[in-house]
Image 1 (cartoon, rainbow, N blue to C red):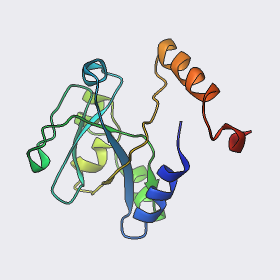
Image 2 (image 1 turned 90 degrees about the vertical axis):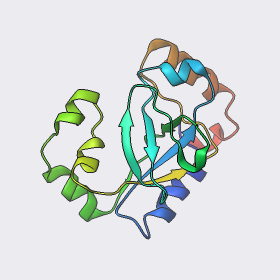
Image 3 (image 1 turned 180 degrees about the vertical axis):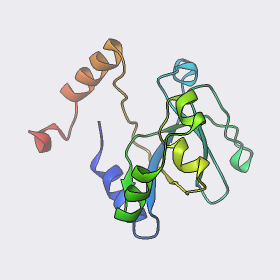
Image 4 (image 1 turned 180 degrees about the horizontal axis):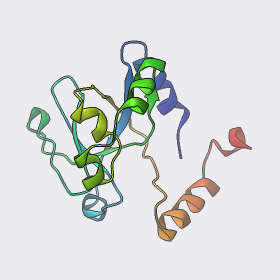
Length: 144
């Protein structure tokens, strides 16, 4: 599920970047070790340096936090065109994360921190959590 502020963050970042994604800080050990939660490391300019399904610490500013990519991508036309032209890479196939294709081809992905948690739906338990969250969502009236 996506909060409108997340979408606005991506749109704003696209003014200066060709490719944008969001991230949050992982707080639970369960999510940190969950292979369905894609973790990301960042450079000092908040560009993605690696994505992994394994627990990888982000040592940016010595915070030692686990960061989860939010799966809300923004592409300018030229960024999406380039992504589609690139062949799959070995790291992309190994991790099963398509954004690694960009990193391996030296294409920057600007990562934007958001405070709203994204809900991944990869398992039946994830689906149940999403349904429960949606029932209590204060913005639900805006969706329907």
